[in-house]
Length: 233
Image 1 (cartoon, rainbow, N blue to C red):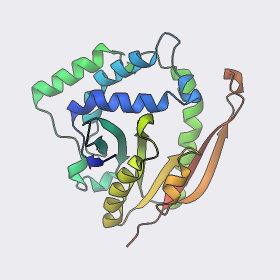
Image 2: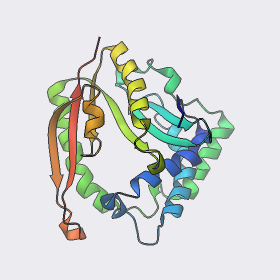
Image 3: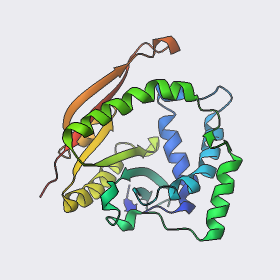
Image 4: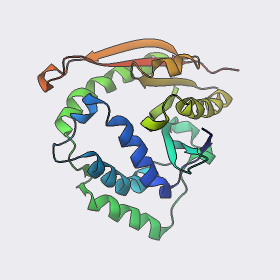
């Protein structure tokens, strides 16, 4: 298979949505966050409508990459990165374009049509807060100890049919070129399955959090690892 890394546009929303949720649908912990009447296709459809607005919201600090299968033209990987507040001028080529007024209005209307006052339909916000809060606390403590960081991977996903072909590694290497050029440290929260991806690129393990999901019928704890990387010269 042949792939290429490219920047992201709002028109990519349908392909990005399918990659994102096809990948996470295999995660039993993630599935528990959704109402029983929200099947995968419904979630993907809503996400595709939300994404253009989400892609342009906070665009000064967000950077995005996609991987495209050069044979089929399909998007097979997506990643999102957050840069420090004082580095808004870096890596502009990975920033989504500023929409014109008509586009912006269209994106906002699509977002409103598939959300409930801005909240994602079918998502269990109580459960999200229960498990998301501790994750945020751990990351905040690491950032406080380590100083300014480039949050290298805010989101990283590969379509299940293309896993094992280096898709995520392609995006990560591209992002780290920018991090190293700027002399920034990098932080990432990874799943156990994804930890090796980051360690192969020079990340060092710093902390783990295991969360108990037993009351939701899941016997295995939900585990996240945090890793840091110093800039390479």
